[in-house]
View 1 (tube, rainbow, N blue to C red):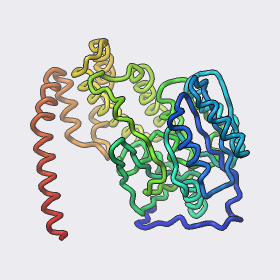
View 2 (view 1 turned 180 degrees about the vertical axis):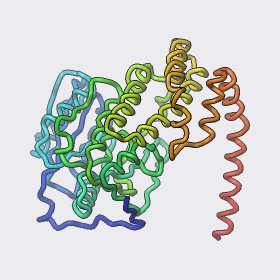
View 3 (view 1 turned 90 degrees about the vertical axis):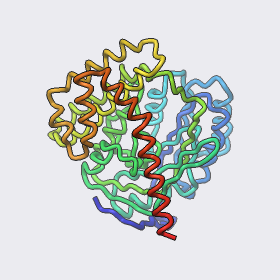
Length: 365
């Protein structure tokens, strides 16, 4: 990986901005957000765009809004279909693409005017086939933006390793909408008929990249609706039917590809996640709590013979192995330990960190 503390994609001359870029949008009953999203695409300073908007059987005014914009701007290609779920809408977008590059916009989000142009310039200047950017989290009462001027260029599967690590400093994520990439990377690749379909698609997309560039500057505005969160509802049932099996399949694929090192990282994060799920389900009002706890316990204990190696992978935190050992001896004791940790240990650490920050701030002054 090559790191650039200060990186500026630069402005490309108009004659160098001729390649067609396909912007893909899927829409379902988002009439109150849709105009802002479409307007943000039309405002891009990179103008040679093919804007594919798939209406997945909306029952509100979304369909009429799309058609009105398509009548005004010939770059918009409106596709209306019966409701079939997000994976069918996204695949309909891919089937309609004629551009050399692809990017995505969720209908309730928006792009900065220079997003596509800046990411395209970064692709060209680094010879990459994929560009990823940071994004802002837009809440009702504030915006979270950790942008810097840094950039990182990854060779081969360096990006896949960074993706698997789930490092919050690099917002690569499973989402498709903070990425611009060559259309050829999608040959034969489509979204599967399952929940968390973007996780599967993005994993294989990232794996295909030969060189990629990550811009640590936010160009995408991701709307976060906290009012819809359910803090006591347990875990989405599709976690057990779709997400967890997919994560196990990911490790199998990496082993088959001869990347035992990456499979260990993937497994470490998977088993760490399973313990988090177990804790969350145990504290929830999930009507299927006992069955979900049984499934999680079965998954966890099924990998116990490999934990010595898994929990000693390069990114492993020794505390996670200690937690796992407690769990294997007694899930009840593990849950008691986590309650103590959440009630006493974490607040002390947070308070200590705040104190250290105040001291550092005073020294900096």
